[in-house]
Length: 141
Image 1 (cartoon, rainbow, N blue to C red):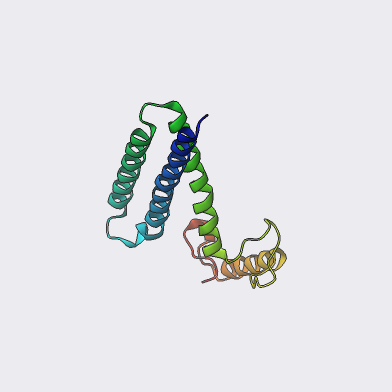
Image 2 (cartoon, rainbow, N blue to C red; image 1 turned 90 degrees about the vertical axis):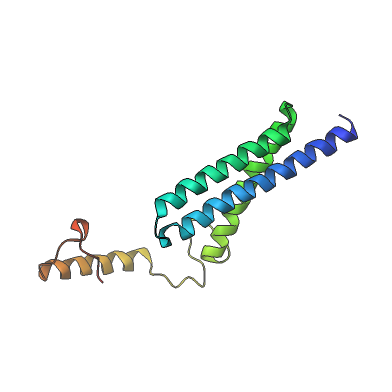
């Protein structure tokens, strides 16, 4: 493999990364704001169409009929998926932590306390003859 091919494949990976960042960033934006609009179904359909159109066009242009460039573009696309997912989870929860372990600054209830709170709330609701949670009642609100 010569230098020109390495540069071409590197640019294909970069292009795939940009296509993926736009695709998955647009997906995140759609989910975030989709239920706030007056007609969410229309937004979801238009977003899906635009994102797929952009991705397919980008892959077609970058690939240029060469399998190596297409695969390099796909690698960049997949890497961007992992990076966008990581960035969004950091925004949502702060710094990343191990699954199943609480962070030091996590002020949420431990599992036992949550179970006892939900259990006592459901018992209280049944004593008040309100609709159970699974039949349309709102839990403990």
